[in-house]
View 1 (cartoon, rainbow, N blue to C red):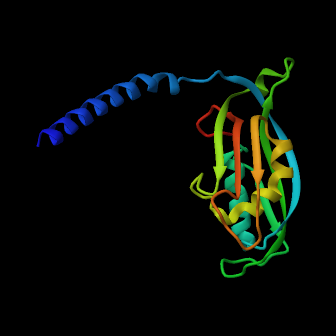
View 2: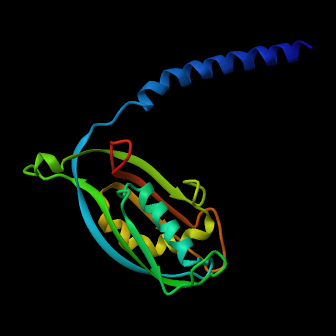
Length: 190
């Protein structure tokens, strides 16, 4: 009985100490980052998708590419078109050509017109088999094949872009993309 009482007392003290430490750490972790003067830049890119592990319909592929691009800060008016694959939810294909017209933020030049300036922040992000919510392990080949579109057309800091896709296999470590990306500070993000 004495042992249980002592254990409960120690647990309560540890818990109360942990809560106060967490409360003290929260303000510094949630502190705002500096706003950067940036401007929208237009991009046009095409890539081929060939999947051995995951197959998509044209509509499904367009939707997934759009979600990834928007998550990384592409402006809301982006256009994604997949060709060479069937349309409809029950029509799946292993291959397609995907064309993307989109705008992303880049740091503004010192002489940029004031009307073109967009406030932006460096925003930490992570894409892997479990985050954001719309990603899963089967998306490794897509992330791998989107690399030539994503890397040169977004503004990055500390980018770590890793893929290790094995055909017909899915693991939690298939892909990971993380770092900081320049995103609009506006609530509508473009």
